[in-house]
Image 1 (tube, helix red, strand yellow):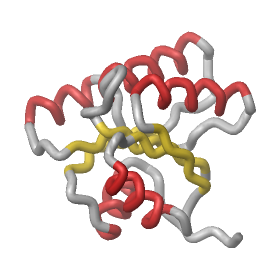
Image 2 (image 1 turned 30 degrees about the vertical axis):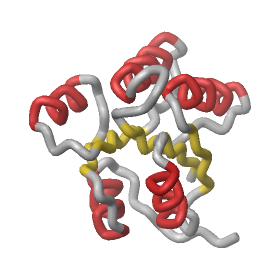
Image 3 (image 1 turned 180 degrees about the horizontal axis):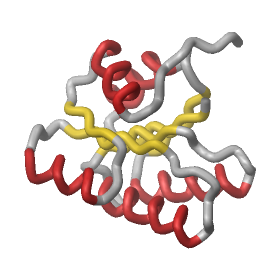
Image 4 (image 1 turned 90 degrees about the horizontal axis):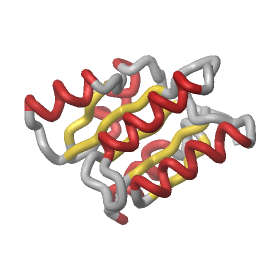
Length: 134
């Protein structure tokens, strides 16, 4: 499984990488622009992301803008499958959560993140985390 972690916070990225390293090959992006570039390159290289953990508050295109870009790209390019997108935020705001689902995210995870929470939310989004052999 191929995952993209998008978070501008070093500790947040490091923690997600630690939790996910036994389950998938992970790339990271620290801004919205970088996330869009990584997403595009993954399709060009024919190795698209299965799951994207997308923080909402990131520089240069926020998480909602990135989500919108990805869903439009998938539609316009007739992608054979859609990446599972899990929005990540420190805010447990009902309006923000509703907005995320309206914009076609697959799940929403509120920080702080634990391994248990990550597994539950990933499974809810249709991304069961299974250990990989390296």
